[in-house]
Image (cartoon, rainbow over all chains, first blue to last red; front, side, top):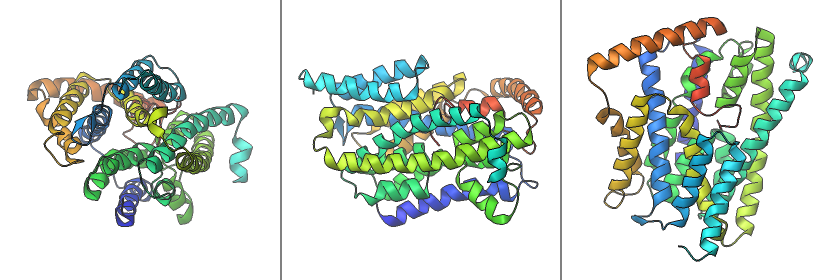
Length: 102
Length: 267
């Protein structure tokens, strides 16, 4: 990742953050726009989770990684604490690979 | 600073500590994954200092590690961080003060610090919650990422430890609390299906952005949308008036949905 891309992302992020505190009395976000933004973030997160769980490059990533992510998803849905969810994903995938699954 | 410490209570410090611990584990995983994937050591470190938003950092690095272009990586991270804008409005009252304090406070606006700000019962506690969480999390996150970078550089075969599974797991755990309404759920499933189906054919990074089209595909007919929206915005309006957060359209439920707060979503 080039430095320029990193800086651009940092500047954009800071711009989103600082607008509210600087313009507090002059700006309100229409509720519909706010919902669209939060929906877009959710769609992006799920899409990214799916592609990074299932694919590597242009191909299928193998069964071990999606299995670990699936277990993590079930735990997260049951409101298991975040650290446990993350460690479970790694542990399940590592154990499956140890057992010879790709 | 002294004013913050005087108003902070042991319960606040304990809760902030737990959030820092949870996010710390994610930070270690971020640093290790980035370096193990082949990025130079300074990229995750600089990113954590300058961007300081876990979800966007994972997203951008994920796109790059999949072979995507820097533009796609920046776009993915920036879309995730658009939520910082309504967050900033929600905490505008607690970051008020001299200009340098506003600028500094803006940088530690995260899912977690906003949640701590909104749960405070009075202005002093809101202020204490926001600043305590924001500053502590900034320190914890950056130390954790540094440790992760060192670990990732030391461990040769990260696949054997299943580290590659932590990245999608984090994203999924972040996304699940936001999928409370049916429309968002459907859009997310359509988007994810489209992104996976397009992966063999599109350059890396693009399928995820194409997944945003799921937003349009799953839009319900106009009249139905209008009906459910009007009922929902009414309930959220009554909630934000109860929490007495001025200048804010962000209700507590809205914030807690976007990122699994408190229990350790990451900024």
